[in-house]
Image 1 (spheres, rainbow over the protein chains, first blue to last red):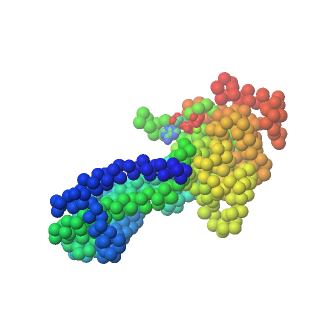
Image 2: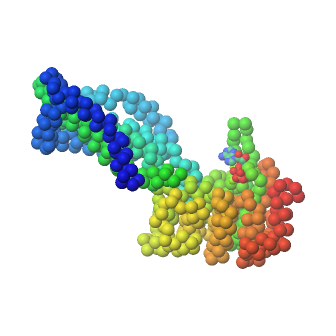
Amino acid sequence: MTVSRRLLAVLIGAWLPVLLVYLWWTASAESTNPYFPPLSVIWTRFLELWVFDQVPVHVVPSLQNLAVGYAIAVVAGVGVGAVLGVSRRTARYVEPVVDFLRSIPAVATVPVFIVIFGLDASMRIAAISVAATWPILIATMQGVRATDPTLLDTAAVFRITGAQQLWRVRLPAAQPIIFSGLQLGLQIAFVVTIASEYLGAGFGIGAFTLIATDSFLILDAWTGVILMGLLGYAINIVFDIVERIALRWYIGQKKLA
Amino acid sequence: MTAEISIRNVSMEFPTPDGVKHVLNDISYDVNQHHFVSIVGPSGVGKTTLLRLLTGLMKPTSGEIQVHGERISGAPKGLAVVLQDYTRSLMPWLTIEKNIALPLRNQKLGKAETRERIESSLEEVGLSGTGGNYPWQMSGGMQQRASIARALAVRPTILVMDEPFASVDAQTRFDLEDLVLKVRADFGITTLMVTHDIDEAVYLSDEIVVLHGRPAGVRDVVVVDIPFPRSQIETRNDQRFTELRTHVYAMVRGLE
Ligand SMILES: Nc1ncnc2c1ncn2[C@@H]1O[C@H](COP(=O)(O)OP(=O)(O)OP(=O)(O)O)[C@@H](O)[C@H]1O
Ligand SMILES: [Mg+2]
């Protein structure tokens, strides 16, 4: 894509958010309702808090939990998913359990982890990683199963079998499917990161927002909400960039097809 | 001459919902070392099935296949394949070089030797300098050349090809046929090829195996007594060429 076309794409994507922010800004400008302060006031407070005074206190711990929890989920999801994908026998025993566990709403598991881990970061990391594992595991399992038989035959004749077949053929071929699971997993991980901070945390964006609300610091609470939105958006953009690099071969092939 | 591959009384049956499907019946045939053998026969007769048995992807219901006198189980050592559907046989996430390098991993060659094998096989098929491309960035003919390069890089003694040129245009097909003849002349690889194109079979082969019937048996083995080197223009206008192709054609159609 040329630079100007990319710019055009950004502009087309941006008009609605820009319009909404503008409407919010003008509609709230004269507001005296304490629950809906003017956006300009929220924005001033946002800059005071988050550029970058409170970032080390509240943003860093949240992102740390997210990063560690997600990393565990990626390793566990891809690892277990790959094994279940190639071994039908193992899958027969394990899949019903997986289906049951993944049907439990992610946020509902937090109390269980509090019982097991108490209220510190390990509880949050455990909740994040477990919730994010399922979509990654399912996507990997399905991707690894769906390998084109012609590719597998070719590999077999060249004596690429067993673990090598999994690592060199099935997993790379499944990348496009695995990445859709990774993306869903990341979104869930972010939700659970915030939600897990609503219980017993002193630090973190979720904790900050909740405490601000409880203390009637409505302005601060609003900045927390905006911060979460912006962070979630930024995380998605980073993911898209990584995906586009990893799947260059797939995107290129699709474009020519 | 010694037999590189011996097919001994091979039969193949597939279980299907409507009972057992008997596809190959008591096939026996020896492929001589350094020979080029084509397998022809009507569509659905069992040509691909026979190749899959030879490459160890399936086991025959009865009978056995020997390579160098040893019964095979699984893919025999020193055997390489080229399939018709190159888009599904080259790994799209690997560049051509890395595709060629993949089967070499098991040979524990070392960096320099691997490099050398990649370069020399790309050169053999006329693709020098294109190793950094992805398969899907290349034309069909080039992808099939790359598949041949991948096969050659393992230094096979046996090359097995299933309709390797069925998906390319006519001109590319002639070029690839001549490439295969050159490879054969350069390395003396024993080659087995399935093809629908009887002219192609006559042009390339030392012997043509005609499969026919349900279940299929070896209907005839035709020796192509046209001397090498062959050329697209002269050989194809040779009177012997015309006789042989007419004969093979009639047998495939079950007319003779
Ligand atoms: N795994 C299988 N299960 C059941 N039947 C099969 C299986 N593989 C092949 N067959 C059947 O065996 C017969 C021979 O198939 P095969 O693919 O070997 O034919 P072919 O000669 O290669 O045909 P074509 O010229 O169309 O490629 C067909 O009737 C096919 O349906
Ligand atoms: Mg076939």
